[in-house]
Length: 586
Image 1 (cartoon, one colour):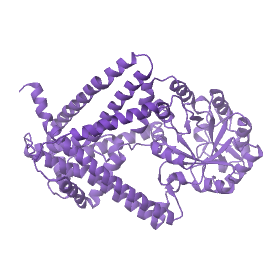
Image 2 (cartoon, helix red, strand yellow):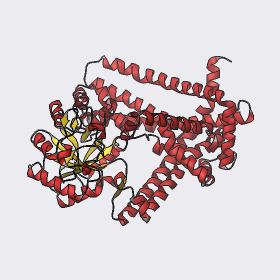
Image 3 (cartoon, helix red, strand yellow):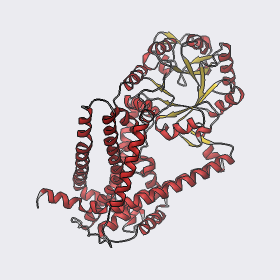
Image 4 (tube, helix red, strand yellow):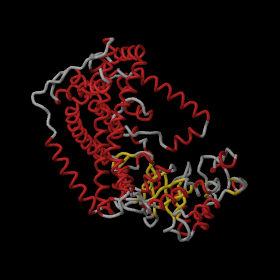
């Protein structure tokens, strides 16, 4: 058989599946959106009944100490099962039908996939769902549900792991263990759904199949991904890169802008379609391998017999009309949709970030000299009631003293040095920053309470810096107290993760960890008349991403890098402006 005919034969069952997969994606995405809408409304009712608008990393105990929290947890776990049912189980059912020629309706496939979650309601099944939803996306290996596919280890945790040989070693061991578990159980859901096996028996079958066929599994995956990559690369080169390269040779003007909008739009549509079909086609390949390994020979797919030929004419016409309308809108509103510059504020992390010593007066000076809008510092209370600047629970890392700030007097702390520099007080930081740089002051540690809030506000007012200091914290009760009792003081709440109407929290700024700082979250915060911060964005790609999202401020260690990126943004081409903006959405 000629090479091109062999490739065509390999891709034939997948090409045949395209219309069914498209219908499946449309229907299941609608069902999932309805489920999430109803779930969100129910969460809001439960939170409102407890006197809250959201639950965040700052008050996670709520989930385990109230009946509303426990019910939210239960519904959250149930949602993972629903996602697995629609996102994976139904795809396996659909793959089975397409490969074996079973002409079942989409509704029948969805019902079978949904009710198959009954077999997973046991200890082993719960572990499988948690692995798919939480572990697989972090590892970047295996099949995960769309709701958590972008899940990753937060920067503040990964930085701690990377800073320690012990932690890095333990993390490496954990990754190896989880990968081994994931690989050996690749076909466990196939056994549960297709062979109707109990979870335990399906797991044993999967491990047996992988052990006997792991070399072929690797080979088949390499071939599959190569063909997909080659196909997408060919489309991108012919329909995107070559045209855009030719467009770049044209003088700037209306024609080049229209052509840029047109081809970037087509490239974006291609990317969306690849994402839409990618996972279903891969699960179909996995299902084909499952059948092959079980019978010990290559599985021959059955030709699907359709009552009438599939026609894409109507869909193509509607899509073309939508694309043309979209191009017209983008051309008219290009500068509004793809702004050239940005007014995002850069805030140095822990004083001056990497530009100076951590949480010191010289670090603050370095941030100001670099051109930062603000400086984030951390205050803690001493044994005798003063406020000093320190991030960690102790001075061990920065000054070699394992005592906590609340165990020491100011006089004792003033004997410590950070690379030869004295530990500053909050008052010294206020004096140094006044009229030059905004202080984002985090109320930190065990002493972050209402007394600290009252004292911090008193000092800010004493130095008449109400417009030059924002009091922030991971403890929402402290921020809520300040905002309620001192509305003239700017406040900000920092959260790793949150659920509910986070934008409705009682504060002026909401600081989001990188993963949770989505475009939707930022827009929701702005809709409530509040400002959004992201922390701690240090990587160049991450900084560029957030500079294009419309966020209000970036807390970062790499201040100079972020400021140089702002300058670069002001000199971008139309193509770069579109691509940068699209990346913030997809």
